Image (tube, rainbow, N blue to C red):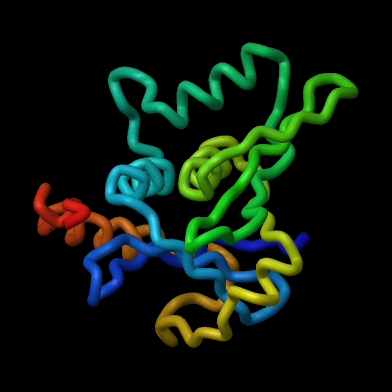
Length: 168
């Protein structure tokens, strides 16, 4: 498994779709994953530590995992089938290790909330990751510039329309 960090959340110009850029910690490859607008919002809230009057879905999931006496060991982006990425949550409860299927965007949103590492399968990273030069003005550390990510998401969310999500 290859550990990655959320390097950026961008909006693809051609499709106006949010895109996660997961960068390997010890290299220069980036795995791009398209996600939906609601998932982009959930990730933005996690990055900003936005308090909400009631738990959002990913907060709720983290609370349920904790209440059941488990911890999130990691989240893993496992494979790509028919242009769809798959992931899983890896939990530990006592001596028991659990693997639970998850969409990558939900897994990343949860990982950001609970501080769990994000991993990518070696073969998936080898086949789908790209060497990308991200903005040169970004810091060289592993943490994304949260203010920049939030502003990009805010701009996207302010411009998106319901008809942008029609399958026609």
